[in-house]
Image 1 (cartoon, rainbow, N blue to C red):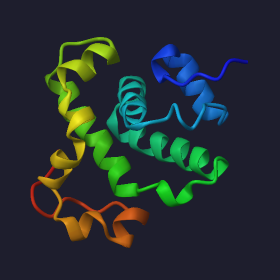
Image 2 (cartoon, rainbow, N blue to C red):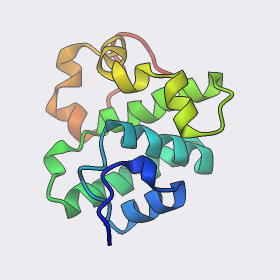
Image 3 (cartoon, rainbow, N blue to C red):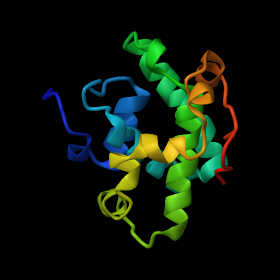
Image 4 (tube, one colour):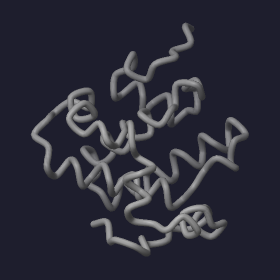
Length: 140
């Protein structure tokens, strides 16, 4: 089987399937792929269920590839909330169009997060293991 290095080469179904069975190439699962996962799950499940589903998928995947140290609960949940926020304003129906329209999610995500979290909250051990609400500006 050919090793896919760009998540865009996979259909949404293949992408989710490969995450579910932990067969996706870890190099394929970059920041944009995380955003795509959020977009797919929000479309399929709505935001509250998507938050639970993405945590389960990512924890299973990082455990499988031996990268549990890279998982960050607050980042994961706030990413879903950020994607959902931009989806509410978007008229696009494809992720490729959505990410072009809302490029800040891809190119300046850290700055977006820093508007909502002070650096010490964002980098805390507690924020990594459990969700912390924004301490600077609410994100709903």
